Picture 1: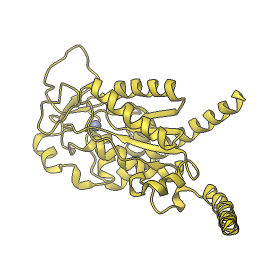
Picture 2: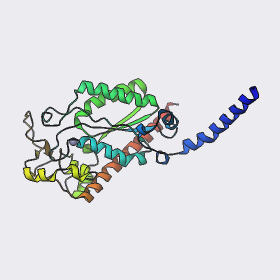
Picture 3: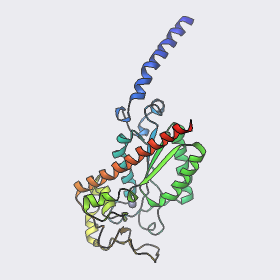
Picture 4: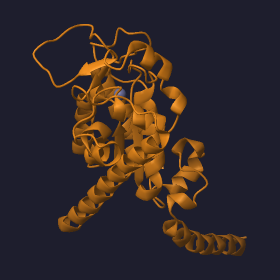
Length: 287
Ligand SMILES: [Zn+2]
């Protein structure tokens, strides 16, 4: 009996020796799925952190966006995550689709808002369990500005409590040159439901930008230039905003939209990889 147990144990140890190095040498692209929720928990336990300790969490909201779909802020980070996971060697977590929509446009049909204090706690809980699962690096792709403050608060608390590495990026505040390179526009922060946001939607689903409505309303009436300041109105008079007068009008060229989106995704993947590299370097200094 004892001998049988020993034999089984030896086989188990041998199998572990054979399997472990193979797993640690694998990349996410070698796996069956890159979406975390497609695995059973036992398989996930084998993968995290052995194959990867990195996860991408897309977050957004449901909000009016002029002629773009009200789900634009959800579709965009999810699509960017799809374009980034391979390069980042990261799994993709199920997205957070309800966020903190601004008061000025939250009264328009379809807009849904979660209060900032609830959002902070919700994000905190979700990210905490990603960390408990074994992810050491959490990369949040945020598709919506109203989420920024609650997100930063939740990230700060989690970092101080768990030591986990957290990183967030907002596409409209990075890689400004992309719009110049593809559309010839001035490099600047994008507006809302404008050329750039529409490009990110068009690149994935051209049917999600309502050209008929855009033309019916008139391109100058779908939004106003966002450069002026000094007044505040509730509700806002439009659900989209141009980065400046005369610029930010939509371009329905899907090829250009794909090129623009890929540039944004590449930039974001690269800064995440750079952050991981710097964090790893700092880990070395701690010893
Ligand atoms: Zn948006």
